[in-house]
Length: 302
Image (cartoon, rainbow, N blue to C red):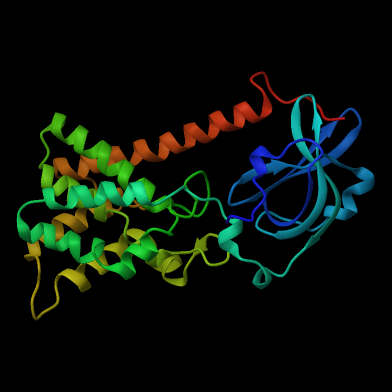
């Protein structure tokens, strides 16, 4: 990512000639007629294009969110807002680009992993800690978990988004659980494991999308199956059946399908913490949008 243009910091007059991901396509009306604005991005952030007016509409016809486009243009300014004045744009085949350079990122994973690694020794009893470590000390799991998005759309659709979201949920759940009197060990273990099914439900090699298994079963059900297979093999189960069911219950409560209602304080605590993380990300994204367009709304472009 070192050679990527840092889109949020590009100065007026900077020339750009790079592949970018189309993050949004918006067509509006103004006194001067209809126009289209594209939001383009890479791993560093986004920049909006100058308007494509009616005469220029054929240049962007057929371009949709999720396309990768080769762009030539120059950063300009309109009413103190940066925009990219595009002189050339064409859609690229998806297999010709490095998607890790184009997809949004949740930031450096190191601090999040340091937090999880600091929490793991706190989990008691040893049997429950071993169950969590069976995932979080596995290098293959850590590699994929550190890249997986927390969602396939919205503000948590970022590389590393699941890792960030999991730490947020666990941090909130630990604090809230102390207030509510929830079991601190089950709460921490459940928070760390609540969304592991997204590793099987999501794909992020060429954009964020559901896998075939994700479309059929969803992240929560896949997560319960992952626990069953790794923690309770017939030869040497790490957990008793009731202990396994407690963790699976948390996965189903916190999952997107809301399959069951929480019947333990830990499950309810994690459900609330999960919602707080999602709503916090949406609020932060909304504030960024408000700053980008100006506090009092969008002015009609020239």
